[in-house]
Length: 262
Image (cartoon, rainbow, N blue to C red; front, side):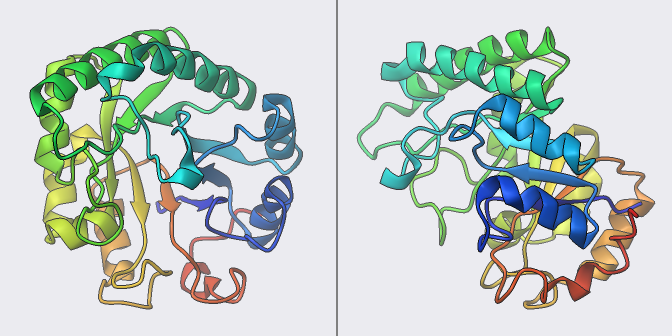
């Protein structure tokens, strides 16, 4: 079964954030995800989801100054206290919304940084976050992000690099976030990779390539891929983390077969 979650950071952007919940439900989505809920009170986010009978499938730990280009800081040795505080904040929102999966972003590593030290910091910070999250029944996911096009300098850009960190962390509630768009750019062979890594995947996200738009606008055969993922008995959410090529609603024809929640 293919279960889609609307990414409210990238979809329905003609509306204020809290109004996007109604738009997602109206389009037939049963779940939502987003990068950052922190501009709104946790109670307001939770109420928007409850009012429209939506599962909050995933959001990120506080990523730092997003507008300035920060994409997390969990690997930065100079920000460990700030990171610990960010875990507590994220868990406040998780408790309010019932979200059970949080994305921990490693951040971008400067060229001159000591990678071994940054890796050590990331492992220690992820353990701390995982232990606090486990007490709340929450899973953490780590995501390789492509450094060729979207995010040069990000800490890791391949699945094996993330799995090495997860293995070093050694916590059962830390898993892989597999983004089809990013990994099509960096690795390709996404179907076989998902099949091989499915026991370690905690969340999947999608966008077509090139362009990072909705399925059907690029080179990937999503109907076939969805069928393959369903045949593997993946029962998690698939987050639609794409930038619509036009109006979000007009571009949802590709999803009609999966948006029958009502």
